Length: 147
Image 1 (tube, helix red, strand yellow):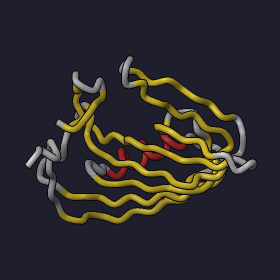
Image 2 (cartoon, rainbow, N blue to C red):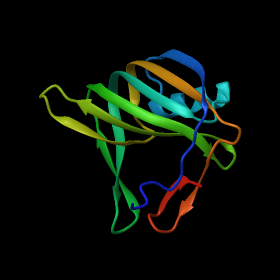
Image 3 (cartoon, rainbow, N blue to C red):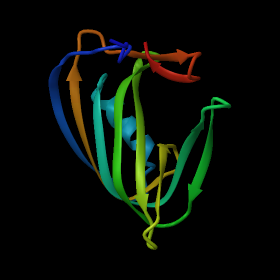
Image 4 (cartoon, rainbow, N blue to C red):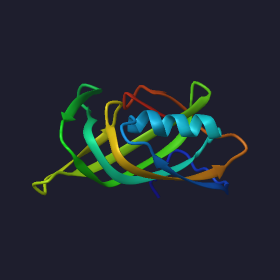
């Protein structure tokens, strides 16, 4: 059978946290601040709401770099998904987001700083592990992946 995965982690359910975000805050900075304040070292994040403007990235595999897309309009967050792991020994949020604009068009990508919240709700599910994974640079993909 072919190798289906590189790493398997098994832990216990930890804290279940929920937050209402402040109007005008930066979405990624808020998520990052919450996990740092709560010392969430590993877990999942989901969020919804709306934004005043958005900034997302798309990874160009051939060039191993992100390009940035900005949308300066009010949009609904249809789905926000992410995880928390360690990077440089500190809690780090990796999130993707899908938006809907007023014309029914879908936008999305890798969440970047510069996405400003109109209204938002965040749910974090902590997973307790003896040794949470650390993100390190992977030369094959050009991304910071779990070691």
